[in-house]
Image 1 (tube, helix red, strand yellow):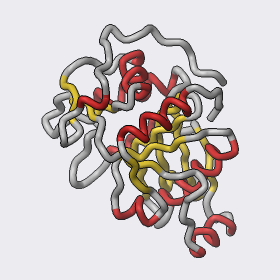
Image 2 (cartoon, rainbow, N blue to C red; image 1 turned 60 degrees about the vertical axis):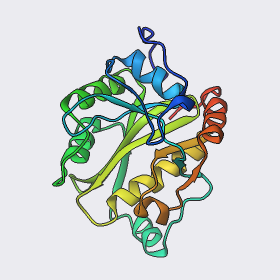
Image 3 (cartoon, rainbow, N blue to C red; image 1 turned 135 degrees about the horizontal axis):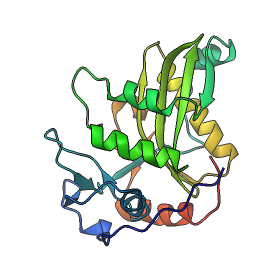
Image 4 (cartoon, helix red, strand yellow; image 1 turned 90 degrees about the vertical axis):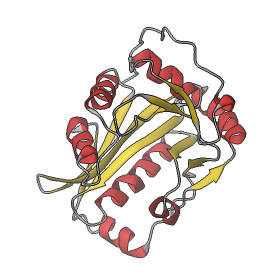
Length: 218
């Protein structure tokens, strides 16, 4: 299904290269679908602070996961091949977001962020990958897709390796569908172990332009 048209944002996006050294480029604004999509197209993403204040970011360097460079361990490959887990897409996006937001240390997924991304899901722009063990949601991830670009927003697990399975399935799905860029924003030790790496903001923006220009379907 093609994503639905949304009205354009009332805001003009700043040049991502004007961000502060910490990556912050703007504050305030709104989370209307047109604003969020325009921000991603410009290389910018929303990430509220602990008080819920809406902040917009364009870090340099920027992290991505090469679609031909996912590091899948033998144990993970065996776990996937045994069929102990079932994987689906876009079947429980609300539950995946709830799982991602349920963090003991707190979360940036505010009620406003969750509502905005659920609206984008209903419009066909946000997608989820679910990992099931029986009828139990064991893990998953969600993110936003524009053309051949996918920004992975968050993932979670309730069973060991369930989030890794979700990511492995996402990588395979994107590669199969002709996507060019899987953005993961920042490199963590966990993501680095799976193959994520960083590039300069300028290189990221060049790759982003190429990715959003193609017609790919999640």
